Image (cartoon, rainbow over all chains, first blue to last red; front, side):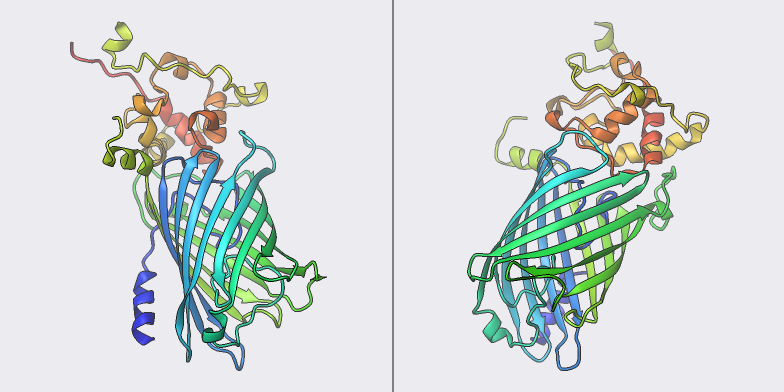
Amino acid sequence: MKSYLIALFFFCPAWAICRAQENPYFVTYDHHLEEPGNLEIETSSTLGIPRSGQHFYFAPYTEIEYGVTARWTSEFYLEGQATAGDSSIFTGWRFENRFRPLKREHWINPVLYLEYENLNEGSRIQKEIVGNSPDVSSPNAELRKVAAHELETKLILSSQVHDWNIAENFIVEKNLSEDEGFEFGYSVGISRPLATLASGTECRFCRENFIAGVEMYGGLGSTLGFGLHDTAHYIAPVLGWQLTNNSSLHFSPSIGLTHGSNPLLLRVGYSYEIRGFGTKLTHWFGGRR
Amino acid sequence: MIASLFGQNVDYQQDSNWRPPTEAESRKNPLSEKPQAAAGGKKLFLRNCVECHGEDGSGIVKKHAADLQLPVVQNQTDGTLFWKITNGNTDHGMPSFSNLPETQRWQLVLFLRSLKPTTKTP
């Protein structure tokens, strides 16, 4: 267990790499998609600070994102978690697609989101919060046996107001493995670069390389009981730092607002973008030049 | 032939459907009196645009990207170029760059004005 935790720590390095001007949210999506043909690899982690009687947990995940077209992005996730005093387990995979139906920029830009999740109940990455508060007390040996094949859809609405991004996500999720109705959740975010004028020189620490903001997200119950009762909600400052032309780091402490939330979630993410990956792949496999 | 001499992508065909609204076309570049801002525009161009348009802006043929040196591009207004950067042309593979701050998009427009065709040695 200890060696696994150490390996996970290095899997999610603390040094920073930036994506090109992407918003630093961990939960909220905006309308900006991956550029066509580009591949982005991201490794992120969620560290859960527990309440009394609960245990620390560390939930890393890897994300591979590809720009299929200028209006369609696909992503694949692998995730796991390690709980102090318990064990570490693989918690599943996800396949996500985002599609932007409108061709041009508008005041509000919609994006349609569809994701299939092949998980177990030990999942802790909390890439989204839906339904009621999760079970963080049961041992991993029990949770890993409970499958959660879920279909998730989001309506993403996002606006660029001068240099501010404002995004709202409305989430509906259905667990195909259990008869527990449809679960609902939300996330909202706002962010802005710390400087809008690009300097003429390469620099790591200039303000133009930093994007700051805040997001808020939580569950809204289900069709069996809609509302805020026994739900988890968080408010989270976010900070993104662009280190190089194609790599970035983002960081967020998420503050729990309800008894059903962890008091604190610490999130860190590192991403690296490979430009023109689609073209390179075609060449490797003998495509036309 | 003369365009070829200047190394221009003479095969580039402009998309006639890719046109801004009138109010967008008439916008002026707020950085037009600050030519020094073009240096930042060059940095942004190298970061975001060379994959398809090439370092000299002449356009990579297999990407079907515009030759930004051509008069058909350079004769467009600053507002038109800003609108095209902001909206992209998603039917033809150019993404939207609305994620860049407005000031940086105007810096890109400023830099685009500096792109000049280079003479090919026969």
